[in-house]
Length: 161
Length: 361
Figure 1 (cartoon, rainbow over the protein chains, first blue to last red):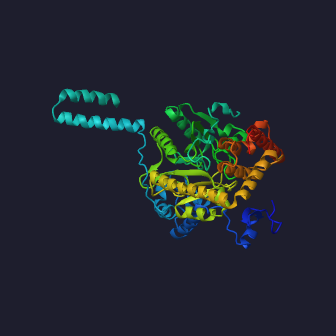
Figure 2 (cartoon, rainbow over the protein chains, first blue to last red):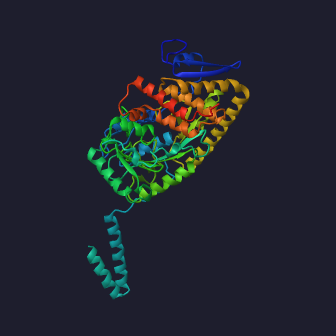
């Protein structure tokens, strides 16, 4: 649909007005709408990352840490600047200082206050943790001369190891 | 591989049934949580093999979760474009996951698990995007179900989590809670009374933002707005949702008030305009997507104002989704040109309205 005013550009603002009990519809391009002082309600919201990327750019320029690479995924600040995306979870540790400052600006905070999270234990971690506990109990059993219990604990540790 | 929608008990569109609160103004409520699995590069940086391993790990975890045990999995990377577009039109997958976004081509390992009102997108911008979708204004209910799913999945998969920053995401605008709550709301009253500019400006002051029908980057058509929280960090999940609940509740009240003002001050003009919209939908032979959306917006307002009584909000919701290009092509069983799509759309809308036309007026 072409603009009702200039008949050249595509109409992007569709204005409905009610005057003297009559409904008028006007289809305008962005420029003609602006010339008439129409406030567009369909304007695309400003991309939240726009400002953020600008900040990153400035920060990189001043901190000269262009050469730093994430040890896990090889992402650099330049990569982030180009895509607006980090490469992996480790990036948050590798670029921690910069990220903290940027989150403060973009999100208004850098501190998570939402739900806490405890990742599930992997089998290996779980095994190590149980083993550690058994060894500790064995130490205490020996100290308190509970030899029967100690023998039992030693057998269990041997099986696990 | 073709798309077998019969596997989904409600076709994945149970949220259209208009059973929720304020269903004449609020179409749907969605909450999504962004999560990543520890040990892999984020999706955009990961290799094909890594993404497939992420998918395998998620699949195993999903199998032992009650809410998802009966879920259906679609591998987007094995579906033809029309099927992917259809899932996107139903709001079940994002444009990025469906590979419809020019910036993000379809990825190996892109998949979605769908169950009643719940979905898990795998290998989207983040490894996991969990979402709950409900009819009407239902933030608390949506959060209760997504929170449970998140805890169940998080107990089986190690999420990437940082003591200070919270849940880690590819984009820094999602880090922390990873939560985005959004309410799809129809605001013709505020648009017609020209109050909308003020309302939208005040949203931003309250830390909220708005987008079009299909979220980020989509335009506002048919007076449908998606209102959502802008930030994800520094406030708890409950605080973010409370704020959204309060503000959207206020917007719903203002919309209802604007509709009363319209009827009072411009009754017959509005009535005429809305019946003309109905007339066009009922008899037009060709409709573009934007035209259909705008006329449907008018008819929806007429139903809300009780000017048209025999049409259900459910029918209007279905029209909104099923009159889109991929749905029309799917129904016809072949790809359609743009003009064929417009003809098919007009035909589909006419038929649907004829079906309920008995006592209209």
